[in-house]
Length: 256
Image 1 (cartoon, rainbow, N blue to C red):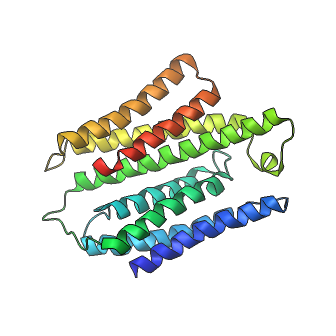
Image 2 (image 1 turned 30 degrees about the horizontal axis):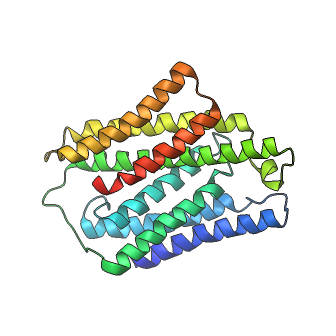
């Protein structure tokens, strides 16, 4: 059943993005009206997939690349639902759906080619579970920050074109995007800090490579926040930096 849940979740996010794109093309007033219901539907199927895999392994379901991609996707969706309204970023879900769809599509292919099967631990280490969960939740926050950066660049381009389209009027005010971007970067960095600290309490210490990679990602985001706090980076530069930093973070996933 886990593969069916994953396929249904992936189709939900694809459908949400397609519906939004069609609405914009038709110049409808509310192209994101089904945004939250579709995100919730996809989240339900994601959660069912992770529950089945978790029961199969007897631990947090992040034992292979496919599960990690789904967990990061789940993190992006749940953080969007939790923070999108508070940050006045209702359209963030529409921009998130393509990347969630792609992550889960890769996961489907990965499992279809060769599912590693159950990997129950010899003993359950709560610090390991905390380290893994908080680190991947942090990646979800970083992903949302990168997506908010894309939204800022789109909004900025629309403003400078002097001929804004329907998308311009659907996006949140540009100042909200800049503020939300910094908050998402801070939330992700705090979560990753907790994850790294938990790693030092694990019964089986992580490898040097794992610590170096995690530390490098943390350093990139901590420096980005520090530089912004010191020099107040222009929102455009901050957006580009958030996108580049998430690209770097994604490149390190295989080493975690």
